Length: 141
Image (tube, rainbow, N blue to C red):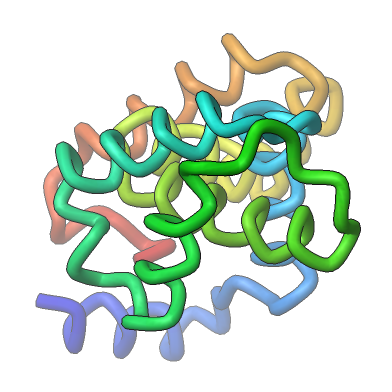
C-alpha cells in the first residue's frame, strides 16, 4: 500500500520536506511533552509506553534510562532533561493524540493554514480527519 502511495507522491511531485517533519515534531513536543520532569512524570510516561506498546519500539538504552529515572524526584540536569523529553516525544508519537497532532501539522502546512499551528484543537481535528481517510488516499504516509 505504501508503495502505491509513494509512487503517487513522486508522480505528482508531492513530498513532505524534512523541515516540515521537524516542525511537526517540535509542535507535538510543545503541546504534549511537559517542560518540568519529575519522577511522577517519568512514571506516567513509563506506564503510557507499556499501554501503547511503544515500550518495545524504544531502544534498550532508552528503556533502561526511562525505568531508572522513575526513582528521581526532579530532573535538574539539562542533558538528562533533553534526553527524557525526546523519549517522551517518541512515546507521544505512538499514541492516537500524538499522531493526530503530528499529521494535523503536516496537513495544516500543506493546506496553508498557518493560523491552525497555534491551536491544539484545530490540529487534532485536522489530524484525526486525516487518519480516518482510507489508506489509499493518504498522501503523507
